[in-house]
Length: 133
Image (cartoon, rainbow, N blue to C red; front, side, top):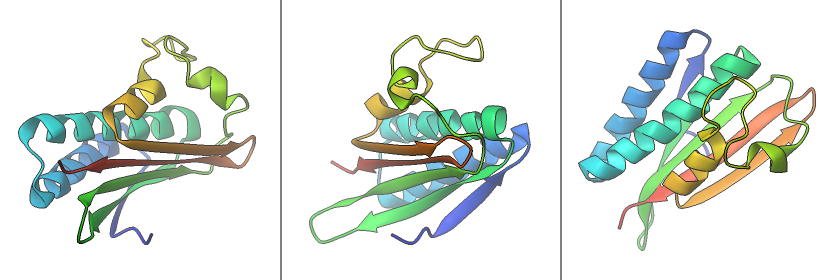
């Protein structure tokens, strides 16, 4: 997959930009307002994690437009410290920032596909897909 559009996340305001762009793309694809909100929420969580934990990264978007499927693919990439225990951060309620701990597990629930790879010291790559139904 080659991302069509990316938003670099360096400042808190970039989270808003990524969220809005993702919502606009979802609307173009044909997602209803409820799914647009779900997608925007997932993007906010992914972008916020980059801002809080990696200092810099990017959120990229690709439209999925196959004969039998339409959807949006969101890829969050950073070169931060990585996640040492991926299974731990995927537990509901786990938080290192004092938040509710709904971040990555919440993203997984909001989307249809979710995959995360992380290497300590080398960054994290999250891919999440929502299909149009």
